[in-house]
Amino acid sequence: MGTKFVPVNDRLYEYLVRMRSDAEDPILAELRAETAALGEVSVCQISDEQGTFLSILTAAIAAKSVLEVGTFTGYSALCMARALPKDGRLICIDQSREWTAMAEKYWTKAGVRDRIELRLGPAIPSLQQLAPGLMFDLAFIDADKTQYDDYYELVLPHVRRNGLILFDNMLWGGRLAGEPVKEATGRAVDALNHKLARDKRVETVLLSFADGIQFCRRL
Image (cartoon, rainbow, N blue to C red; front, side):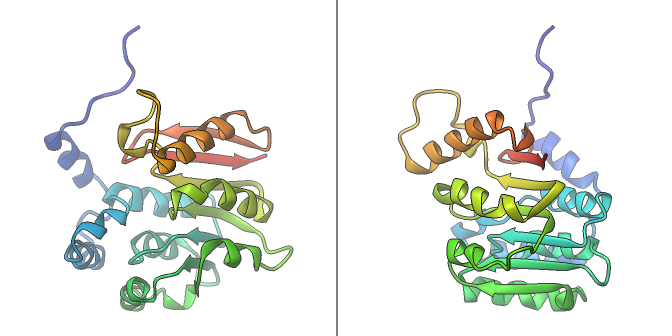
């Protein structure tokens, strides 16, 4: 039958990035530019189209309660918060006061600061401190890859039935499914991909855009 995917070169990628509803959004563009100025660490920011995807997804499932693990400079949080109703709530967990200070500046500029609760500190203790019974419609996880499985087990009980959990960077730069992976980060991502494919608690599909998103629905 042949392949069912289209290889993306730079020119095609630039085209697809332009073909999105918020491509001309000035606040998102300003945040991306300021983050890019940070240098090499700016690779931690999600791609343009991932942000739009998260915004559409948040609105499409009528999410009112969202959890983010790994906020960086706040681009993904801004996209999701904008899609929440005015009484919606997004809890962001991150341990960097410096990077999240930039995030808060743009959340305020976009008029969504009141929808976001920022919890500073290491992710695992912060997740362990979530109130019993606190449930989320959507969780987006984009933090230390070696701890992804720990995040998953801590987040899953807090996601409602039919709620969604998304993990970023699950193709690990395209280095999976080739030679045996030696790096701890790659091994952790690969192990979680295999675990999720077999896990009867969720229905999951690995999406190939950007650096790969594991898209999970809680059963």
